[in-house]
Image (cartoon, rainbow, N blue to C red):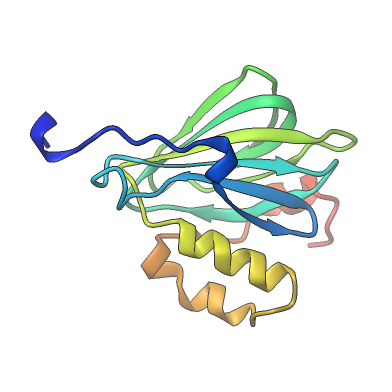
Length: 164
């Protein structure tokens, strides 16, 4: 893509759309359609210990995490670690990953997908499911559309204290 094919994207805080569920608020910054497919970005603020996403992978994009504040527990492959404020992580395509606010900590995280994926409709759907306004099957049925493929991770279940 040349410079003539795209333009600057500015999202003002006061005008940014938010999507929320009982444990997080997501500020939608720039979706793929606004960036000519170069990236998608949003900011999520998680309540203390809130689960952000179960184990999943993407086939078409890398997912970047930048922790603005707090602490985020993440799974990458089968390794679980904690990212603190200022830490940056890039998860390449086909790599299982998951994330949650670390126990006893809130987390404020900037997410970027590159190349961009149309994620905002997925985040809106996720919020509706978490609030009980939509059927969870809609998430599973949208895996190809949103390039969000869920997998089982014994390491992540153990980190969350879930039974096998």
